[in-house]
Amino acid sequence: MSYALLLDTTRCIGCMACQEACQKEYGFPVKQEPGLSATARTAVESHGDYYVRKMCMHCESPSCASVCPVGALKKTAEGPVTYDEKACMGCRYCLAACPFGVPRYEWESTTPRVQKCTMCYHRITEGKLPACVEVCPAEAVTFGSRQEMLTEARLRIMSNPDSYVPKIYGERIVGGTSVFVLAAEPFEKLGMKDNLGEQPMPELTWKALSKIPEVVTLGGVFMMGLFWIIDRRNKHMNGRDKSEEVAS
Image 1 (cartoon, rainbow, N blue to C red):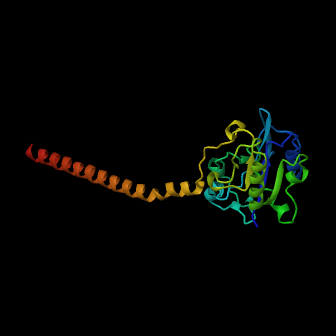
Image 2 (cartoon, helix red, strand yellow):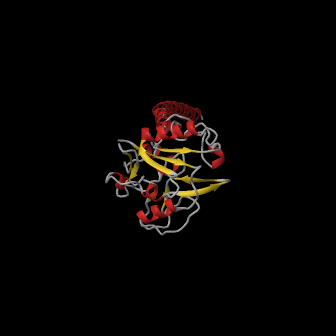
């Protein structure tokens, strides 16, 4: 079963319980952090009258996994995008590839790792709730199957149309994600990227990469042609020099 999280910004009270629970779960220092960092896999930002939680969106077709040359990042059948620190070679391609700018790197560590939410994959496989879901006092985050979370999000919008913008963030953006967000204001006003389109990012990557052989071939033809012209010119110049020497 593929799972998902539903984040409701109209319910979040900014208590930071989710961040604290996450830090405890993964052995990070328990402290309030204003944004995502190497020791904060989730963060709650204040935007006007609302609190907005930032975390990995767990894309259905994750660009971070598509660019990872060693398979350290992986989209699981259960929904979360996991990270294997033992396989990671530290190339940091995932940092550049993520359309949401989520992954963080342990720059100050002698054995640096990439840090991002894994939706508590280890807890899910044990039949438990993600740590953040378990502690949220306002029920601002809900966990269940991806289809259940989509259905729940639609029901909330239909039941309270004046309380929500008529859109589920994550349903279609970049091919869909396993984290959905509901809001009372346009997502852009809440510091969220809403102009990424619906096409999965890896498809754009492969389209670009597919042009490489063509570019290489054309470049090779051009370079060979340039070499032929230069070589022919040099031979011509050498021949003329020899003729002048004989004449003199």
